[in-house]
Amino acid sequence: MANHKKYALITGASSGIGFELAKLFAKDGYNLIIIGRDKNHLDQRARELGEFGVEIISLVKDLFNREDTLSIYQSVKSHGIDVEVLINNAGQGVYGKFEDTDLNKELDIIELNISAVVILTKYFLKDMLYRNSGMILNLASIASKAPGPWQSVYHGTKAFMLSFSEALTEEVKGSNVTITALLPGVTDTDFFNKADMNDSKMVHDNDKADPAKVAKDGYDALLSGKDKVISGLKNKLQVAMTNLMTDRAAAHSMNEQQKPVDE
Image 1 (cartoon, rainbow, N blue to C red):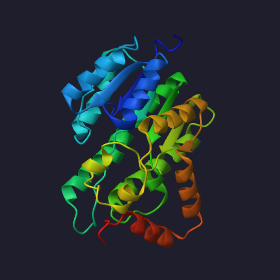
Image 2: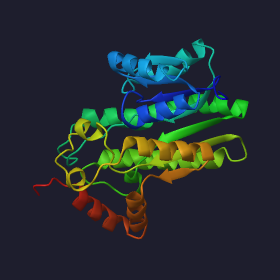
Image 3: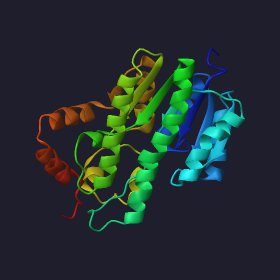
Image 4: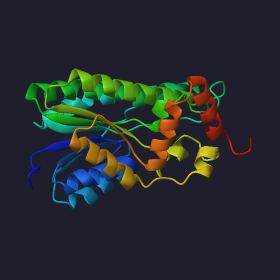
């Protein structure tokens, strides 16, 4: 396979969109470095992905912990590996009005959704630019396009992710390194359970997208060198409508979509 010496590093690779992306890269002959917190779950996924005939390196790291995140680059380099593809997939949210939600959980989410992405991108992008070769896929969200009552911190982190990705796209222009942002909507993953969000109207009133389809949209956009892709027609239409609104109107619309079903 043409990619048999190339490595893709994927955070949050043991479930959801991350695992579906891992399968796509493995099918295409990429060796994988998969990162997750649960060793047993990660080992199981490594066995499944190994059936594609590629090398799988599992790194058990907690990206809520900055020291763990900082250690990833050296762990990879200790294997003598150059990362051709970086997938910043891991992310979480917390649901509820900001006055009621737990501050420590929100600070953890900022660490995971922003700090970990900045750290990994900083280290691996430098190597990519030195080699003049590489691709980065950042999991943003259609949440990046509007203020998000009931998920104010999560929406803020995804707005950062999109802005960060677009800025880097401009900075690396002219090189053979590309940055792509993937913007899914409501997707059938464990995100909503972890965010305690199952009672929101958004979850009740929407059909959840197949994570395999979302992953394929991101994978195709990444390999095509696109700067961003919105996954799904419904999400494209929603973003188009949001772009026509004032920020205040967009926030109100999102409030109506995300508030609990019993309100």
